[in-house]
Image (cartoon, rainbow, N blue to C red; front, side, top):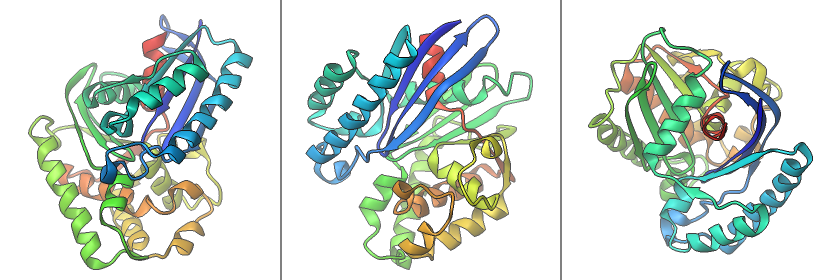
Amino acid sequence: MTRVAAIDCGTNSIRLLVADADPATGELVDLDRRMTIVRLGQDVDRTGRLAPEALERTFAACRAYAEVIREHGAERVRFVATSASRDAENRDDFVRGVVEILGVEPEVISGDQEAAFSFTGATKELGAGQGEYLVVDIGGGSTEFVVGGAEVRAARSVDVGCVRLTERHVRHDPPSADEVAAIRADVRAALDLAEEAVPLREADTLVGLAGSVTTVAAIALGLEEYDSARIHHCRIPYEQVRDISEKLLGATHDERAAHGAMHPGRVDVIAAGALVLREVMERAGASEVVVSEHDILDGIAWSVA
């Protein structure tokens, strides 16, 4: 066993996994898995820069994670940064701060690398021989699409995510019909782009990742509080995703926040995230989505091990 620490810093959240990994058996044993909403991508789509307050929120989370990593004695650490830090002019400020706190340089990876990590994390325990998977990772700034079986066949990252779409289009609470139409148009254009590289309609199983998907699953399951064990590998039919998407788009901030399993940091962006999932399922012709709690974070951990 090798004790590893993986950090995934996205547009909306930063997450940590400390685990014991055994590449020989394919076993990954969680020791500590946590998530903090930091909204690193605040206004990046509009300004092209990481906001000072967003950087400070992220650095505060990094300080807390550094302590956890020390307590567990992780032998290897890998820090991966995704959409927001890819897009920002001042990402050197971000890199410098992370190095000072954690002693490792954040790797600002490409969308294709992000997709490959997500695929490994999501499918490793599902196993080969089950046909092909379409893995969809709906993030804050981007969405990754990966098709493969035992290995990745095709991947594409597109710049639609729940934070980016909300900041770009939503000015009312709940969103107006025109705002919803604008989000939908962006998502459909992104799906056209993704489909140039990834055969979205050919896979046997759709696997959905990240907070928008798991939150929709929690609502579908009627959970009063978030329960990752019940959410992991649950299957949510398209009809439920469609209905939940409609309800979230028509709900006010307070009505969305009233869902017991809703993380406060997702309340303002979940409607856009749910709409992305719905549009993906419609394009792929998927009758259901298999929801995975294992994703890019697990893929990063395996890459270290």
